[in-house]
Image 1 (tube, helix red, strand yellow):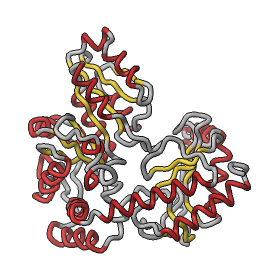
Image 2 (cartoon, rainbow, N blue to C red; image 1 turned 45 degrees about the vertical axis):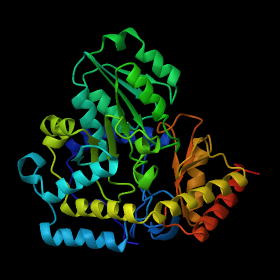
Image 3 (spheres, one colour; image 1 turned 135 degrees about the vertical axis):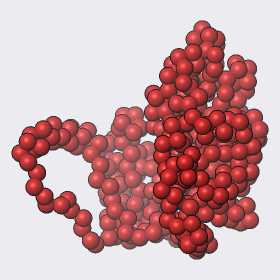
Image 4 (cartoon, rainbow, N blue to C red; image 1 turned 90 degrees about the vertical axis):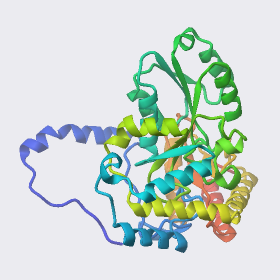
Length: 410
């Protein structure tokens, strides 16, 4: 495996002195198990991948539909490069909007059963853009689930509106906030929730959220990063899963998971789409996606609509994997989706579990504090459409072997 090391260059003593604080910060991160050295992928992102030079069953990728190496998808991306080049070299509002970008926006809107959609550079910037833009006054109120994604948290911090956090999926607490004096005084209210929560794999009670929003005159924004391409008819997401098409103001998503590329979107009304396209700072000041990305997503949308067996296989694999883990005594938390946590409850043990699994030929990443609360440390796994039952049986056998060695199961 090729090793990549920092360049050996001259660094002045003044710079070394000024940056001495970095040594102390890194030491603190290491003590708190927060210092990250990512493993290196040496192959395509596949169910069986080469990671750090080792062939492993990959249970950490968000590649739900196993589309990153699909021949039809790769051909679509290559054809787009041949036609449009590798990039736009411009922001959308100057000369960075190609017809293929608008084609994807229109097709995504149809997929999400909305009037229109707008593309952003990532799922992260999609959440930041909408929260910052819609909640741009101290007279408004942003209300967020406590386990929402970091991009929603950062978007709320960038917004000028006060924010209230309700306990995870606690509808009584959400109702209390909506009935508060601060809420009654707010000229505009926005409830924000993940559709599928990325660490636990559970689903937001969106039907109840929408009911409360309608009662208390609030808008709803749902982040479907881990739901689009995964749940609902043909993978349409949480809104469709709850039969709420046409009843939710904003659907956010990413193109980097089931859609195997990079970028994000907001699916909404035509007027709100046009408003965001005129004032949302990430849209105005970042270059647009390469045309190959748009072509990739258009092709995956086509495959989702004509090949329902892709989602069927994803859920068959999910059911098998969860049932086998539970059979051997592993705690998989509240998950009802392909995101399956194996609860460990201790940072050092979770990290050791992950490292031992890797040596056994399985890549499953440990998630520790502060990404999750203390006592909720875990191994987070995601199965994909591309895994075979043989792959999953192999992975299960290694989980059992390591789990018994570490006293996680009997």
